[in-house]
Length: 322
Ligand SMILES: Nc1nc2c(ncn2[C@@H]2O[C@H](COP(=O)(O)OP(=O)(O)OP(=O)(O)O)[C@@H](O)[C@H]2O)c(=O)[nH]1
Ligand SMILES: [Mg+2]
Ligand SMILES: [Zn+2]
Image (cartoon, rainbow, N blue to C red; front, top):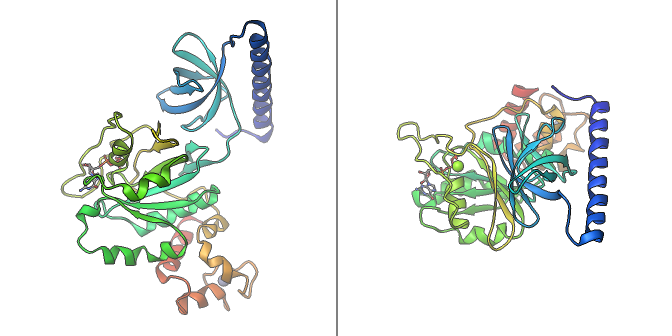
């Protein structure tokens, strides 16, 4: 059920009041005794069933329930909690998010700096899926990076470099790693001191990489199916982990594919950033570069200034979902 603007405004107002009350009473408690009261700010680590795990600023963990008007709280959210006892609390308010990432209308995580799409040769990377993630991430105001895992299985790296060259020209980093060979040297420092999330197909090795980067956590990993070479959806909860050298890394459950239902034509187009510099020269101002005459984007495809594969992918996505 979606909320009306007025309901949203009211909820926001109530939360702002709670935050401001908590601040005041915390100041008062500090002044009186040097100890603080029952309110803490914290970060959401994960959700399990109706509960959430929240870590306060002093790294204490609390099993929390959320007040009923706080519907969708996800890993990365900054919240105000009220303690019930040593390890339980109630989430009373959600602080404003800097950004958030949703897929197929489902909120995944918030307050991110970098989104890493992990791909591999088994299960085989799908250009379609990369383009969908680009649309999602671009529309969330974030930047997409690519991690190519399982390089130990690759026989000819040139084919892959070729397939991904369109993304490199978009300025997207493609980092080759192997969790199997513990070869993550290209990746480590790029994650440092940032809020990162790993997304991608099931079975590409997201959790395996995180297990290596963050010692002692032992996230469950699972072999991919022998026959179909697909992952088995091993990770079920989106969970935030702290990187020992600084920063956070969120592991998320893999997908096979997802729909772009919530996106308009304009938003799908926004995921194809390289069309931008040409679209101003299209004859029609509202050209969507499909069947219109004198389309500068189509001209750019013909003269190889825009990758043909990317244009075909655009045609496919925009006709399927709009
Ligand atoms: N050969 C090879 N296998 C790897 C590598 N990284 C991970 N794997 C294997 O790939 C399989 C899937 O790994 P996971 O880490 O569970 O994959 P995931 O992306 O977290 O999957 P979901 O949780 O289902 O989304 C496991 O059997 C891993 O051992 C790698 O670099 N090389
Ligand atoms: Mg996993
Ligand atoms: Zn056009």
